Length: 385
Ligand code: ADE
Image (cartoon, rainbow, N blue to C red):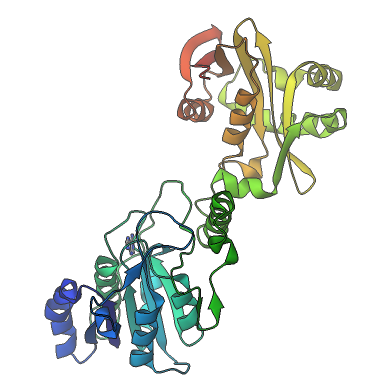
C-alpha cells in the first residue's frame, strides 16, 4: 500500500516515516511518502490560505496548491484503488469499520487541512477522479489534520494483511449534540468550472448565516443522523396550537404515552389514563395547548395554564418512535415561551418513580420541589425574561 500525506508541516509526520513505516517497509507492505503542500505554491510567501468568502473568522486553504498537488500525485485522469482522505472535524467519524475499508485500498492520499478548512471545491474536484472520504478523528478540533492522518494510518496499516494478526474490535463512541461545519470557499470565485455558491458573494449576512445553517443541518442529517439535533428533526415536524379536530388523535396518543408512566409509578392514579374524551375536549378548549405533527400524524403535545404566578406545564407527550430525538425538549421550550407576563415560575408535575422524565426536566433546568401528593413530585424553574 502506498500512503501519501499532503501537509504544510511535513515534520509532523516524522513518526510515520520512522517506527511504523519502518516495520511495515521491512515487510514490504507500505510505502509512506510525505509531501510539503507549499511546493505547489508559486508566490514569494508560498501562500496556502486566504480569507473566507462570506466573511467569518480564520482563514481557508486555497484550492490551487491542492489541485496541483493532486494532479502531480495522481495525474489528471480517473484513478482506481485510490482513496483521498481529507482529515477534518466535519467529516464522518473514523471507526474500525472505516479502517478496514481503507486497508483494502491500494493507495491512500491524506490531505491534511489547517486553519478553518480547505476550499470545498478541492473536495468536489478530486471526487471526480478518485474515491474521496472526509474523515474526522472525533468530535473535537485539532490544530490540523496531521495527527488524524497519523492515527488513521496507524489503524489502517496494522490491518493490511501480513502486518499484524487480527483487527482490534470496533469501539463505539458517544458524542455531544451539535451540527457539522458548513462547506467553506475562498478565492477565486470560479475555479475549474466550479462557482462559489452565489449567496456567499451577496454581502447579505443574514442570508449567508441562513445558508450556512441550512448546509450544516443537511450535512449533519446526511452524515451524522445519530446526532439528530432538534433542528434537524423539526425540519418535517410542525408545532402549532391545538385545534378541536386534534382531539381524537390526542386522546389516543395520550393513552399510549402514559402506560409506561403507570408502570413506573404503581398505585398512583394517573388522570391521563382515566379521563374521558369529553374531559380532554374541555381542557384543550380551556388551556394553552401545542401539538406536533409530522407527515400528517400527531406525534407530540404539551399543555399549560396559569395558576397564580406559576405557569403549570403538563401532558408533555411524544410518540414512542420519536422519543429521544429532542422533540419533547422542543415542545417544552415552546410552551415555556408562551408563559404570560404574570408568570414567575414554570412548574411541572411527574411521577416520583419517573426517573427518565425527571432527568430530562433537570437537564432543562428544573429542580425537584418535593412530593405534592403520594407518588407525584413537583419540579420548578424560575422564569427569566
Ligand atoms: N482537523 C482538526 N480537527 C480534526 C479532527 N477532529 N479530526 C480530523 N481532522 C481534524
